[in-house]
Image 1 (cartoon, rainbow, N blue to C red):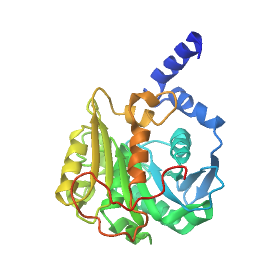
Image 2: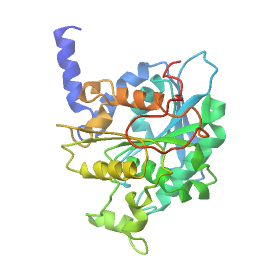
Image 3: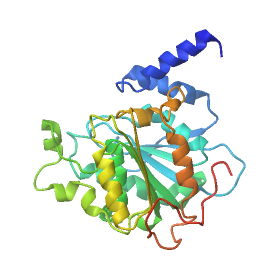
Length: 311
């Protein structure tokens, strides 16, 4: 790579998701338009215009059903669009996984817990239709960043949402959370409106729902995160381990709230080894949701492993 191109790429990397602007998303998504990943956009999982999802499929001749990752973006439950996260769908599909990016309804259209109902409805759709896109509906991993990580964790740990939507919680074999507010305490006027009576922190925080029934988890956070404190990840990791759940957790020094998400993009991939950790985590998951117990401490995964990405 010439010095001029290198300098240009470095500048692009510094812009990636620096403020979640249209420019930064454009930079993050640009390389994804040149990938061979198959994208099916705008599939309805509900009646509302915000109840749509995009599907990213690896291009392969392998007929084996692949694990599925469902990813929710953040935005404080007030903004966001699945199209802006094309780079996430492509990056995860390039690892060899069927990847689904749903939208969900936002405030002021809805409040807690309605966006969680949307998330559960998306998972139910995936369980019914994943096989048609080459995915394995018995091996679904829930993933998100920021508010999206909260949604993934709540759906994985509080089974009533999936059950109410007609989804099978036993088919959730893993959780991946990036910079999630698992011990959410509303600290703005808007958050107080979103999370309000008759509900209480016991209802909306993830931590009260930790149990030995939780799936294995990969939890990543930046120590320099000033928007969502890394103590959220530390507390959830400690709670899951105490319940006997297998957890891989990393707090990255000198990384902020957006860095771990940005690391899924080509321009900013050097910020943190997020993709490598996701690949390692996915490779070690149970081969099917009916695999033996989800108990046992530490970060070692079950010996019966899912196919490695690309196999």
